[in-house]
Length: 88
Image (cartoon, rainbow, N blue to C red; front, side, top):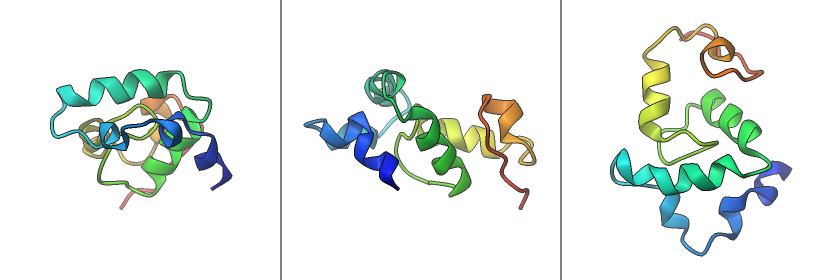
C-alpha cells in the first residue's frame, strides 16, 4: 500500500473530486490521474478489489462497471495493464 502515499490525489485540496456524482463530473479527477506516477498500480488495485466507488487510476466507477460487464477473464487485454482478474 506504499503506492497510496505517492498518489497525486492524496495531496489534492478537494478529495471529493475523486467521488463524482455523474460520469461527466469524473473528468477533472481523470486529468489529474493521467499525470499521476502511480496511476497504473492504482487502477490495477481498483480492478482486483472490485472497487465500487470513485475514480481510481483514471477510471471512474462507471468505466470500471463497463469493464466488469465484459469478459472478466482477462482485464489485461481490455485495459492494457499487467493484471488479470479471475472470473466470478
